[in-house]
Length: 172
Ligand SMILES: [Zn+2]
View: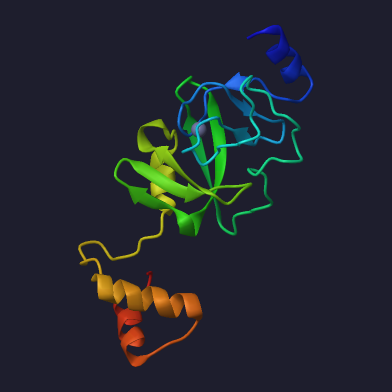
């Protein structure tokens, strides 16, 4: 850590870390626990992170801030590439498994991030709280059925077809 980084960490700028999401070095964590990453493809990407890796003006032009608070929070304890641990507060209903990752909307931005399952310290706890959208052994609904389920759920409407599907997939 250079002198500047050291001073930054003393005065609330946060030290340079590897991004907990994508592992890119040179990310910063501000004292409100928000990660700012240099990788444009990362959910924590922050365009205001200059070439020198310093936040131009923390707290004013940072798009990764937010007041998202999960309604049904699930704590995810995560260890990043550098072995640093971090705790995410994720929205339970947003938890989805994608291959070997768990995608979740996390505080404070509400943006979706992908977390490697291998790095989640409380994986069984997290997966135990994931919405069980179909019963064990039950077939996944067809794309058409998923469309109907999603449409009426989103709009708060209903139809005879939806009622039948709802009965078949009560947790969808
Ligand atoms: Zn990143």
